[in-house]
Image (tube, rainbow, N blue to C red; front, side):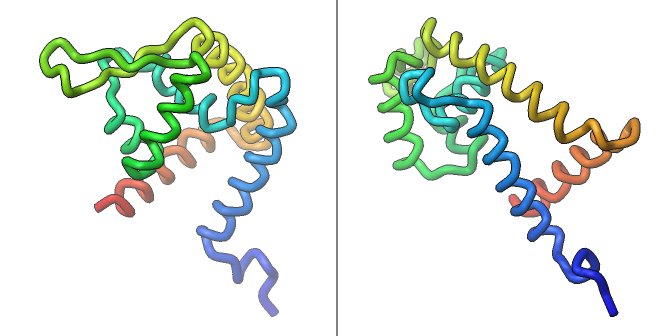
Length: 147
């Protein structure tokens, strides 16, 4: 007789892992303490902070696999919350580049701390090199799904 793990698809394990990561994220991130910023707001400011190039709404849509309407609404709310601002691009005034405001940078610092704690929790049970192998496998699966 097969054990449960032999009958479970990779997608099921990834979904279960995602649920656990979200639960851990919520336990580490108290929204009341951070002005009702959502975890998604946190991930977006983290993404913006790490970029060495100008970022536009389309980049956020692609990074987080969200549609234009969802991204637009979320970024508008982030503007109202004082996390970001949209600034006309020098080359094309129709394009609005996204810039972090001081409150967004503060939220990024919290995100960095939470990410470090989650990463440690996930990888402390792995052998040396396994985390990088897992990341590479995930990258390959995502590239394959996006073809």
